[in-house]
Length: 280
Figure (cartoon, rainbow, N blue to C red):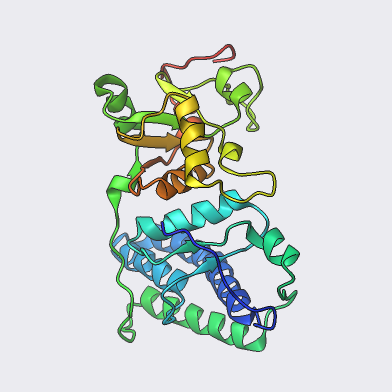
């Protein structure tokens, strides 16, 4: 995904960013319930509802870029940006350093939603309700285009173990990868998928949690014997922090790094899957 820095004067209000974040989070909470309802009734409308999900994430704005800064977790920012790309939205930027860097730079923040944000969230809910009832809605400005090559399944990882087409990197901590430290999820052994290599996602950042320059990033991958001349796929615990590795690789020009969605959690829970590591 494109990577850049937001240049705003300290006088610039952050209301538009807060508004967008509020809309997305409010809509997702409401839609989670609606999706469960639709799965029970029919799959046809579910497809239309999932398409609307991306419309809501787009927030029906005329923005050509999106600054994501919801919390301090850079993993969440990378994952959010990656999800937009999976559904065909290429104009996504990740705010380098996240909200902590924004605060440290002296820019404005808000602690409550504006009345305008609430009105727009309600309007988005009304649109979803119309689709649920089979009613027509006004034309949309953004059409989703799912990019399946960016999301891998367990079967694709198994196949890659045999044909070795993609280099497999794992974003988890080295101790979890080696099987010497427990997984944070109860009942899941630590260890790793055969032929995968460990590149812990914090290695993508400097001490101030800013993404490293391209040359430094390249060194981090090369230290783990990862070649920039061959395809790469990434995994982690649940498919979130792997997006940080994809973000670093994007800066190096590798823009189509697939993420194994189920990652180690799915792999370790599947019966009879090969695993490497002392607790596997």
